Length: 248
Image (cartoon, rainbow, N blue to C red; front, side):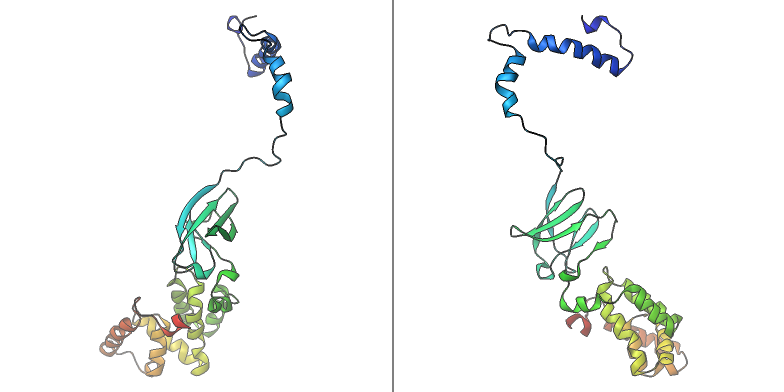
């Protein structure tokens, strides 16, 4: 029986025909060597066979990554935390379909479930520096609820502050300082100061505090003076000038 002389209409039909020829092929004697394929298998290979692994082989992507200043590494557009003392070092990332593991000097220092969320963050509390661990007790929703109770302008400034950092937790200390101004002054003055900060285009904690200290929340809007204040606040609030919360 030669397969080339037959027409098959399905893979199943072809497999049946091949199976009928397989035994005779394996039992056919070698031309120049003793035995056949079947005898070689029975005498040499069968005893060496092992069961297949319980779990299938899993591909692992291995690469080096730089730890950012916010103690996260980037893999496939997602950010995973590592112990904060590894900031600005190079680590090895091993990523499978389900896990992202990070190694430093041959030791595994972090392991996360792999996420497909682009531009998202996976952060473990134990990787945070002390100040961030304290802030981990807070959340964006909790701050927004607090700010909303004070007023819409305070909520607006709070949201602007939270958006200033790539990782929201890095803004928590500044937001806490902003909302705590209601204790030093009062809720009405804080809301008015936030409104003034929005009007001059400087919705930051530094601006609000400066407005309160100078009592500008109690004075009518003056275009010239507020423009001068805005320039002054811009210099104080420039991204290359860090406030006290950066060192606490």
